[in-house]
Length: 328
Image 1 (tube, helix red, strand yellow):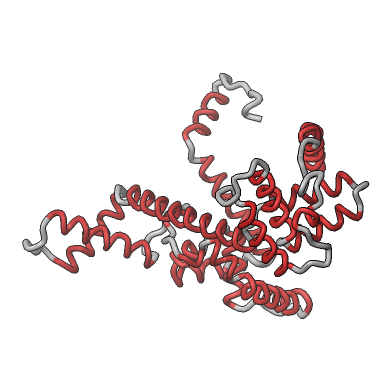
Image 2 (cartoon, rainbow, N blue to C red; image 1 turned 180 degrees about the horizontal axis):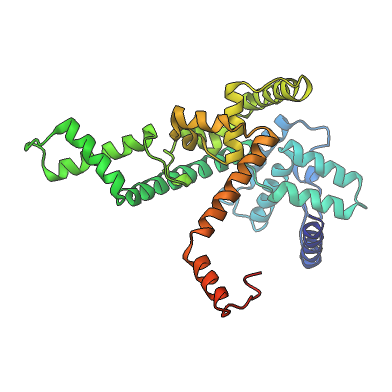
């Protein structure tokens, strides 16, 4: 973070050094003229009076009505003065500029901010950005889901299950054409995925839903944040302060988190599979250590039965095996 801020600071310093010479050529507000004098008013004039005077002067000096040589330049100055004095924020900055002409850099920065800053409200800009990102997110989720489903359709076990359900529902009806049968099988396959009858790793097999969109998540924050706070407080009080035993739902949640399982993956385990995991008590340190030791034991058994280990033992028995850095 420190390096990032240092780089950004030097970047802005470079931009400022390159920009300052061009800023000197910027003609602020009404230039050398006084905006109030151009409109023929005092600083106490109201916004309503400014608009009324502008309409009168615009009719008088408009190039179409006044063919005089200086009419076009006069009309341009009047339009600029009206732009300054009819905008409350711009007029406030202009009055400060008249009262503090010695603060050149501050006055210039304020003028540039008001003149070139986007006029769109920040809230609308943020909302538009969230809507755009949510649309892109939904299209991406849908594309990933369709692509993952097409890959899954090549799996022999999945195809067999689809054909079984198709035969149960439609039998060998000759009224169903090939194109229609293909569409029906695709619907059956998507139904299998949505019901969680099969599980494949990856986020792509999760059905795209609107509640996962960025816009919806942001709108739900005022509702979700208090719930998260209360849930965290309840968890701390029950299991850290009062040292209560885990409920079945909370034990399943901790087990799923330790295994790195998603909700769909945990649902796919079924009641019997979930019960076996809960028997291991992975939420306790003893249960987790025992599970890790069980994994290591399985790795050792797999290594003992591997062909590479048997070959190594034969070479060692004949004295033809030499230790290498890789073996270590």
